[in-house]
Length: 423
Image 1 (cartoon, rainbow, N blue to C red):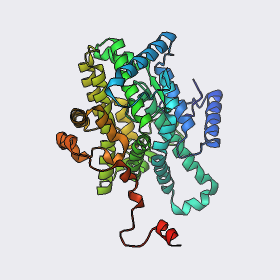
Image 2 (image 1 turned 180 degrees about the horizontal axis):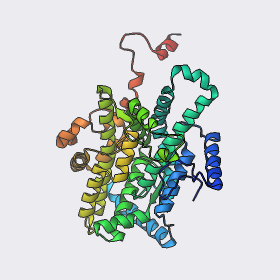
Image 3 (image 1 turned 30 degrees about the vertical axis):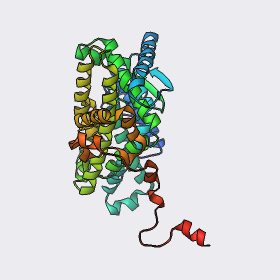
């Protein structure tokens, strides 16, 4: 187990015994290391990764054996073959692999940093604001320790949440975000087996269905150039509107006794973030939910079309996955409580019905052509009447959407190009 700075409720973790000089020296060394290398941002991500790894080690994280590697590679290869007739997008898989749970954490950490750092920054700033104005000048350089402590606390909590997520996710794209490296399709065999046992369905069928979903995600995010940034920006925009509950932070910090390390173990940061109930934040949430629903709805639609009569349990698997994505697993709910982000497509069934209607009306090519530009995609309002949207005529040239920014100024003043022409 890697050395973890004390202060987080890891399975089996025990506070140092003050009467044991060796334990106390180890604790002080770890604490010194934490403050000496706090990390470059508001979250101590090294600590987060260590906490997740320690948690997974304690609960069990079996290595992927050669048989599982081969089974995953074959499932992804077959999934791509089945998807070819039902989508206009070619394969997006450059690397097919199998991960254990710790590898999922390691390979998705870069995206989690982009999503969580802005939120954590506000929390750390709020912790600094709790120091009275008159005391800040006296603290001087010591004030940076507050930020370091905040980054460590948040890193530890995030590490636990990511460790829990890693024990549930089935693939790199399982929660609808492009978390893994571009072009890398990855399944988590240990979690697929556990999930299949819970559904009482054959493991090979569950593996193939997950492979179909992963391969469909890869096609979409690899061949729609703007989509990755669009989805991640939707998450970031919503996150930027989340406010910090300063009273919750103050109340949590008041329970920490510097003389009692166990009080840090008991500290929980859930509930410190609250979404702003403003029109802008509601609109931002709607954009995020629509983006997630369109991605997940398209994936579910093409996967069910590809599996068709080939996969005996396709009906049960499709329904189980829709319920799972709409409700979110226990770990996803923990993560949402911690950072204020619910990464769930609330209108998943409506999105699936909309993509079905579009396919019936326009065919596979016409359906997938809607991904050519974000302004062509259905909006939240279109979910209410899929048939109307599916049968609407697209009587404009897509290239015109990209040229809108070059339109003449409506005030009548010439743009830069006109000025150059006159010169």
